[in-house]
Length: 396
Image 1 (cartoon, rainbow, N blue to C red):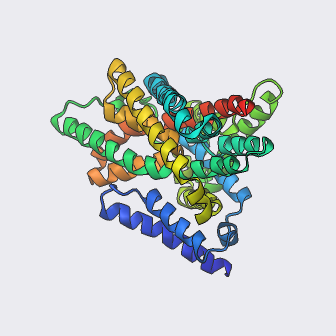
Image 2 (cartoon, rainbow, N blue to C red):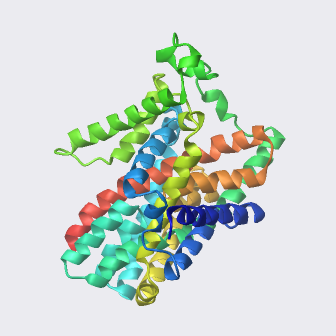
Image 3 (spheres, one colour):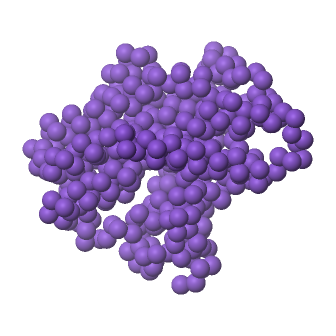
């Protein structure tokens, strides 16, 4: 297969996902459709390296991850982060729900080793999945080694549609409040000085606008991402901190001090291409899920995901009641553990766009729904899951 044919096929899949999402008003998320099509492709005629062949090898994908997550930090102000303490508690409670239900019920159904291997990937991303996969392989548990990867790959199939459903209900409720004039205007809490691109760049106030080129924007974004990476390596001998977590933090700080403007990647005209590369890299993980492998681990796979989702719902429901957060928003935040970034960003935007065409209404929904979804995904996927994997792998 030629590079350009591979690229055309993969972009066509991403487009079909968007098309279905638009036609169904986000009831069927694009990431869900794309995942199915990629799976079918790998089971039929896709070369195993089709994503790398198309021009997105792992090195390119990692570069995009650094830029995208740092850019994501520019969407959150320090004030917004302080406001998300409820989100952090809800995210942790959802993870606790998974652990409690799987250890109490799942152990009797699937065995303790299966549950130990399942939990970190179920509440996290590729890092925790790889840690558990390697740990299981070293312990001589070959099937469970595969299981760790597949549960990471497949968990989104439950998370995507459920998140879309509950976010749609939450969005409709918020939209009704907005139209009645009873919805809190969160935009007023943003620093009033941040009104134009020039005002945002406090450190470059005297820089003529004509010099703030796309390359200068890319340079500053890459520099902040590098600082995050550098700090993570310096901390490595003492404590393990994901560079991606630091990218989010440094993006927030960089925007607050006026080194980065908000949504800098969009302003540098690079967001769409970066998202495309990252989505292709994520779906590339489906190449490991062969039909025979899926049949062998289907029962524990479905069982662990179903039990995990039930645990998330129960615990997030009660913590939401205590914190006075709607059950829909609390459940959606918990569900981000099943996929993290960028799916949390994409699904939230798809739902918002499906509910209204008015830009002011979209911005109001965005202010209320996107920050908790982004923070929830980072707490579970990039922080808690890696900590759990480091602990659980020692139990095998």
